[in-house]
Image (cartoon, rainbow, N blue to C red):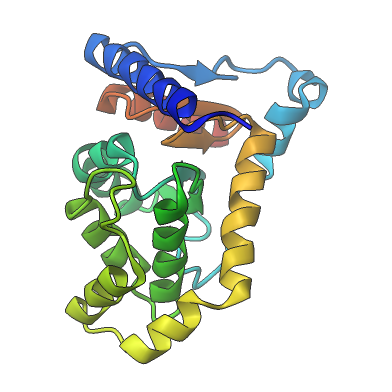
Length: 231
């Protein structure tokens, strides 16, 4: 088991590297080259990424048409400052350009790996989803994101967020404690790991894995390419 200090140094080191990549505008895409015939089948992770889209009608953890030509799946952690950066800067523009136009569907997946508070927040967001308020809760968590693992994210604080959004708080508390929700959070992280997700935010577009809160042009290039290939 990794010592807490070692783990924190690793997280900080990865964060610094991501900052450098973002500042320099250097995209980190895995499997981003257009595959040759049969190539995805020889790469189990690339092939598995092609099967990621859920495309379920009424999915509360998704935005956009189920039959949109392209699905972009995100793995995120509600304590991650880079996930917050993406959610508050890049994502709104992607929604405006692609989701609202019916071209792309966004599907959320949990990768609650930064600590117990990440898991609490992930379960809470899914509890809000049962009242069709996932994206409102998602926005509130990132808007008010505290420092990582400082004890600020608690059952009480999450219930207060739910109350502020007008949710049925008693139902919210029951749902957040539902083992089925806990299992769904765990399953999402396990799926991400199988696909090559090692940090957040990470995104799957077709057979591609994009890591980090990359500049907007990185996402538009990947989505435009996926749209061209879907025609």
